[in-house]
Image (tube, rainbow, N blue to C red):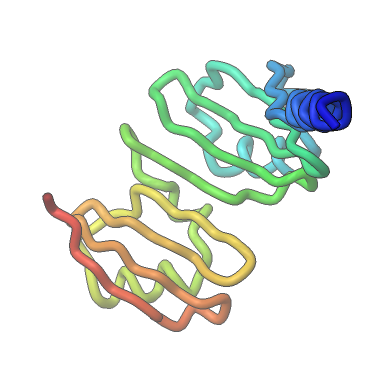
Length: 148
């Protein structure tokens, strides 16, 4: 019985090591073409500090970090998942039209500093501390002010 328990523990440890995050630096040219095009079109004057590929259990993702600390995350196909801009604002050309329209109409003095999308929604942070969630049809589903 002890041997079986030891064997199971050993297998569990081996599987965890095998499926652990695996980050590796890559060159910009190794990004999926869609990600390269997105960066060149929307962040043409910002210098890339480094690019890394993250490999999880069955999927890959890519992070692009700029010299100024701003960061982009892409899925395995090169579609953006997150834009986190601490020094600059998210370029208007990169913001989906429905979100841009809502922000311009309701918060004309605010800029988008962070935008993240997943399978179900977009989450947007503005320079005036408002956080807005949109569904995939750009309907507002939540508003919150986080100025702590």
